[in-house]
Length: 198
Length: 294
Image 1: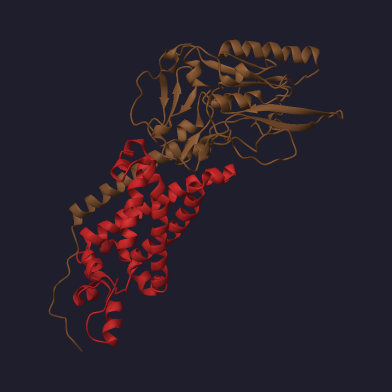
Image 2: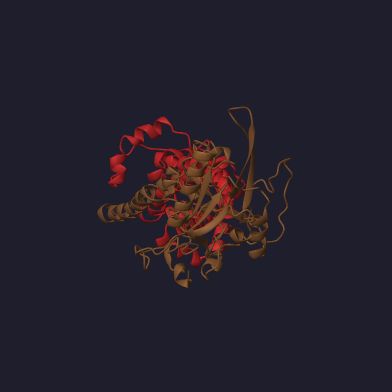
């Protein structure tokens, strides 16, 4: 699930940046040339959105903000400074992850809708719609790119074990207890052994 | 008019400067369309199709003298027909030759992301170079006159070229050559403006058209195609000619401030995470003795 979303997003990022700036237009040559990139960008966009929607159906309940999140958010400075000892426990996803999820979900809807208008621009007679679609697409893309930068950084460099978890589909018990104690206790309370987390 | 008039002065989607940009412009060419003497014979439509080897276009009959609903990838030049009721109870048939306006400040060129897909020559003609076109349709969004049209088979966009191939060989565009009433004129911008002005004075003094005028919109820096209209205060009556066209604020916002802000934000993000890593490093999980089983 994660890899479909991640890899398709990277393709969209590369082709999107090529269309965004003349200084980055050469990126389209890396993926088969300008017209090819223009052809595939919207299709891969649909693939990405389907993956995001799949995540939505799987995790929408897990992604609601709880009181535990609000308590944790008070100590966000400690989290950023890597002083995790002072943090109250949280569930399967922390509030940053939840916010990332919603940014990608709502950003994804905006990108999809504006993207469809741009995809079939020749058939859109309303000038205001063409203009607004371009602006919505660009702003949503920039927001998801910013979120993506933070997400990849945190998943790879900042939180050890993050990247491994999306390759193996599992995390160790001590990792879960440190980072997502409430979820760890919820799992451990029921049955022993490791639990899958995609 | 020689090949020298096809020296390029503006290039779409171009990273860096353009050689020859800002050089003294030679003669800017201009097509003058006098709507007051157009009889709607469509010779210009046929001439354009013939010269550019465009295949027949399918159309739909709308009970008027208009050939097509709008221009198409294979129909670049269209006489737009309107019945216009006058204030004194009579009505007029308004016929306006619709095609690319060859703006001095082209919206299509500003919007295009592909290097060299749209160029503007020293003589003012704006030309699409389909070899570099990626078929994204940004030009369709950028054009204030809704001119570029997409071909779904070749996935490229097409429009009137002001017969750049004829012009660079000393000939007038095909439409001008074909016009039987002489309502189409071709020459330098200055000459065409003078001619237009003379016609406008004639319309005002001798024909009672007090609002006659020349349509040469300053919002796009002036155009390579100018119109003499019976009533320049109502350009919309002539098949939806926009009254004060300019490149939309949305396109300007997209291509200039938003671009710098977006690039700054992305770069800032990358620098930010690098600095965070250098300052705080990664989180470490204590591989601990607490892993007990219940």
